[in-house]
Structures are given as C-alpha cells and as structure tokens.
Length: 197
Image 1: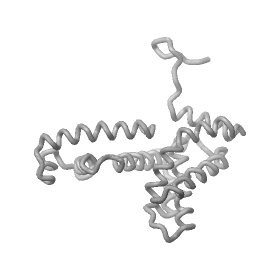
Image 2 (image 1 turned 90 degrees about the horizontal axis):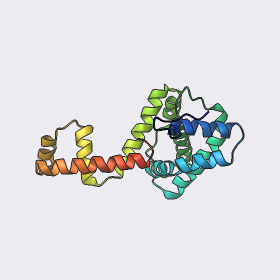
Image 3 (image 1 turned 180 degrees about the vertical axis):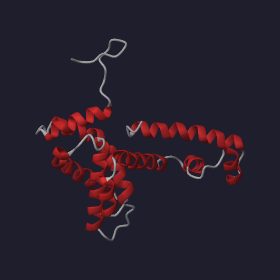
Image 4 (image 1 turned 30 degrees about the horizontal axis):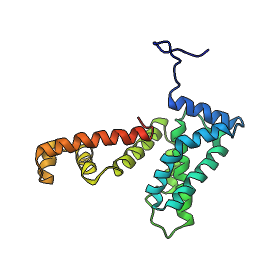
C-alpha cells in the first residue's frame, strides 16, 4: 500500500531509497529501464568526477561508460547495509579512474591509488558516504568563481573569520560578506544539481 504524506498526497521515496530499488531491479535482471534511470541520475556527476580526476573529456566519458558496465555486473553484490548506491557507484568510479590511469600512464591524474580505493571500499558506510560527500563538495567548490571559492575555502578550511578574510584579501568587510552570501547560494545550487542535498 502506498504511504500518504500529511497533506494526503502520495509520499515520494527518498532518492537513496529509489536508487536502491533501481539497483535491486538491475540485480534481478531488469537491465533495461532501471539501469537507464540510474544512468540518468549519475551520468552528469560521474562525468564531472571524470573530468576532475582525468583532465580529459574523452577519458571522462570512458569513466562513465566503464562505471556503468561495472555497476551492472556488480549490482547483485550491493549491500544497502554498507552504504548508499551513490557511495557504491562512486567507489566503482574511483576504481575505474585508477584503471584508466594505469592504461594511460603519461596523463597527469589527481586520483587515489588502487590501495586507497580498496581501503575506501572496505571502510564503514559513514566513512564512504563522507568521502563521496567530500568529493561532491570539492567538485562543487571548484565550479564556483575564483573569488567565491577563495572566500569559502578560507572560511571553512582555514577557519578564518570574515574580518580576517577581509584583511588577508585586502578588501572591505562588506565585500567579503557579499561574496560569502553569493558563494553559499551558488554552492547550494551546485550541490542540489548534483543531488547531494
């Protein structure tokens, strides 16, 4: 029976519950619609991850394709008790990136070595989710303008106050406040687009 929200409308499943349902369908042999739906959900974040790690559009596309082939093959091994489908998918993507790096050793990469990927895969679910969230936030920060990203990095990573940021950058405090406000709004939009929040 379908659950109803307080207003009487059908209650929508949380995205992670829907992802788990889709991956379970893939594991059960429905490699058509369910896999296509998962592809639609994860294609863009995986492509962005590929660009960030591999610095090459063609290799980023290859990362997306290889990740989905491996996701399709690995679907029966997914355990929702160990983490989310998003975590499972991104751990696979890191492994793919590591393999692509080995294949094209002459290209510069910013990717964890295979041992680090395996360590992440065997870590507690919270740790894996934190790794994926950290990647998504870092990727979202990288997409902001230099001025906005700099203010947020000083605030969150260096734990500087807004007056300290103003001193460091040599700009008025009001400018720092304005940049922080706009940077946080832009970061939120980026994270919503990536289905992180």
